[in-house]
Amino acid sequence: MKDKDLQVHTRLVHSGQDRDPFTGGSSVPIYQASTFAQPDPDHPGAYDYSRSGNPTREALEKSIAELEGGTSGFAFASGMAAISAAFFMLKSGDHLIAPEDVYGGTYRILSTLLKQWGLQTTFVDMTHPERIAQVVLPNTKAIFVETPSNPLLKITDLDTVAAIAREHGLLTIIDNTFPTPFLQRPIEHGFDIVVHSATKFIGGHSDVIAGLAVTRNEELGRRMKAVQNGVGGILGPQDSWIVLRGIRTLAVRMEAQQRAAQTIAEGLAQWPQVLKVHYPGLKDHPGRAINERQSAGPGAVLSFELEDGVAARRALAGVKLCFPGVSLGGVESILSYPAKMSHAVMLPQERHARGISDGLLRLSAGLEDPQDILKDLKQAIGV
Ligand SMILES: Cc1ncc(COP(=O)(O)O)c(C=O)c1O
Image 1 (tube, rainbow, N blue to C red):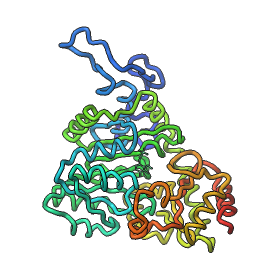
Image 2: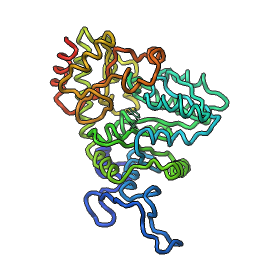
Image 3: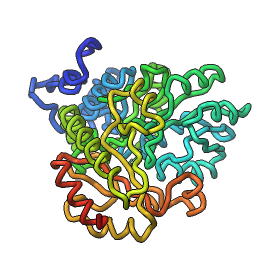
Image 4: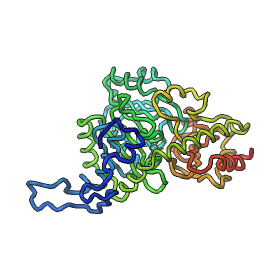
């Protein structure tokens, strides 16, 4: 099923393999096998060993490649494994440009492990794309983007970044976890590699850790395949099946959760205890117009600022309905405290310089009635 003319709702249900190619089953089975018989090693079948290829994982990989509009899809054991695989396209001595409020785990590997391997990174505020061009060095090889960003929901102009990258011959990599291909398809804007934490909206039920990557062309696909097979951070067949099931309901979940996020963001913005709400669906969000141009919606994640860390911790401890913890994108609303969770790895002064204050909370809207979530937040914040 490759018909790009179909609407995204239809593609989410039918992309990749909407049935088992071997039995016609309505769901691709969990092929729980590590190895596949090769009686004639000169003429191996389609599969030999599950690190190199597994039918359940392959169904998922085809699905995400079609949804993102790329040539090749890859499923990994986590979002970080997918992101790391994309960084394997670079080598020691290369320079990368990344957003200053990039997801904490990505910041951590760039500023520790990959730095030790000789990859140099400059972090910039990508809401001003001209700053990207200003930090391009002779050894710059790639730009990494996250839009909306985590946790400040900043918007980066995809077309402008892709144009800068073309001008300087740079690879473009984007973390599309927050919007998912339901809302935003960066390859259509000229990006080369799209990565996801499928743990979030794509999986959708807070019950699996998974990562996905899609390449724009076959050449990058071959290089990514070599990394996936060589390094081996593959997604197992059971988890591949869970993610495949998540994809089929992504549209209805995302639409409902996005509506809820809008209601919650507007509600929070009325309360004097809330100093600022960051959500691209709000009228005063500085990136709203760009987001509307490149994405089908503002998504279901927002963040908001209380007076200080004491107020934020009180709210986190006080919620009765929202799930207080890390992660996002589940059917339940999840309230996170970036300073101590997703961005705990940053030193306080670095975090503050990036605008991630001690009073900042991030909310991923779930499928509950948003009025119930507002009531819960009201009592937890003490409005
Ligand atoms: C934007 C973003 N990218 C990547 C990741 C990492 O994904 P995973 O936890 O599946 O490794 C996360 C996790 O919170 C995230 O929010």
